[in-house]
Length: 102
Image 1: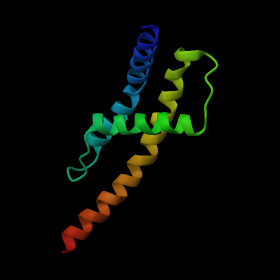
Image 2 (image 1 turned 120 degrees about the vertical axis):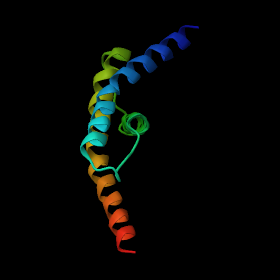
Image 3 (image 1 turned 60 degrees about the vertical axis):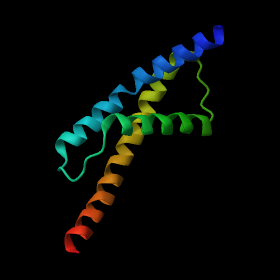
């Protein structure tokens, strides 16, 4: 039972820590043209999954235990968001220009 409570706390902290990534993706959908429309919550969840997998690959040891998960998830998910937005914009622009020329 204690494990379920610990996992629940971890998920709540990780979910709360991914809110800045939701904000970044929401702002990108407001500022970018209509042909670039990605759902902000889905993309924030992708960034959350990428940040958790990045933390596992680099085996980040959290000295503060479960409570130090939040800052690392915030930094990693924002980092992944800031990397993915320009890449996806270039891919979408290329596809849009290619479809427009056809």
